[in-house]
Length: 130
Image 1 (tube, rainbow, N blue to C red):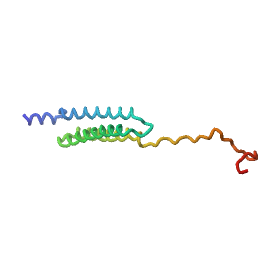
Image 2: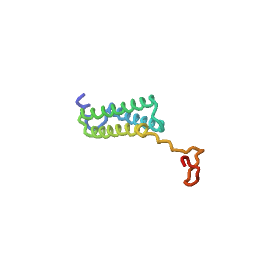
Image 3: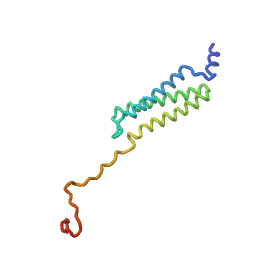
Image 4: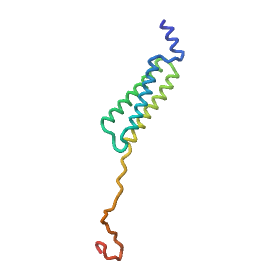
């Protein structure tokens, strides 16, 4: 029985663990995207938001690593290729979606003149110092 089941699983069908891990990684990727979109982009994120973001990103990367190891252990070249590409996308998305929040400093405030400033023209005699 187990030999028959192993033969069926090697024919290219997904088993339930692989299929559920792939679905979980999809859900986590969507969650990561929503966290990045609804976050505060003007200033650095609050500590709770940062922890929540990196926990989701860490679980996503761990699931992708698990799929990669599972594909290697089972000798499934297609799963290894798909899991490797998904792992690279997960790492890139995790870093890429986070970088705009923390990587860019806020713009410097524009220099404004004092409203009571009077320009000094040469020859007017109103200039400080002559």
